[in-house]
Length: 153
Image 1 (cartoon, rainbow, N blue to C red):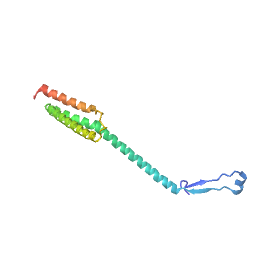
Image 2 (spheres, rainbow, N blue to C red):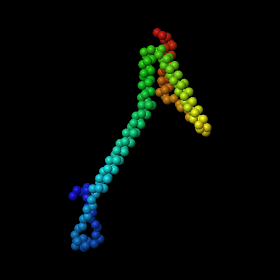
Image 3 (cartoon, rainbow, N blue to C red):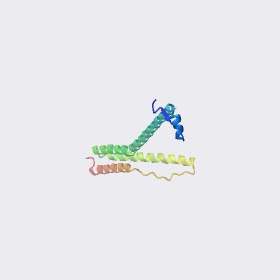
Image 4 (tube, rainbow, N blue to C red):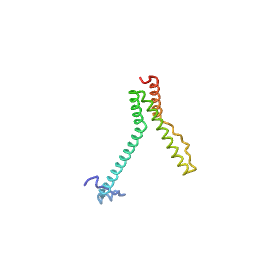
């Protein structure tokens, strides 16, 4: 019999002379069903931990892309455009200004709708721009100043 499938149990006798007369008793308990249930539960635990780690990895990657990689790629594309034609910086600045004003107008309209629905709720939280957005606007302004300084040459 396999040691992992069966568990031997020997009872403890309180008198030594009884053990010598009767011999030694060994009981075997079948553990196969318990072992198979334990294996299935361990497999489920492993799968749950793998799914949890995969979810955290996706969440962390999405956050890194949204906060770091995408803004840096946007900045590098704008730098390439400004390098090719400094006059394009003025157009980029105008487009960015229009997009910013449209987003602010839309946010204000949405906030007014919510305030009408819930009179007690007012948004006091100010969204501060991220450092990459500030850097992007600065690069566009520097490009516009270069365009003004060099003219259309």
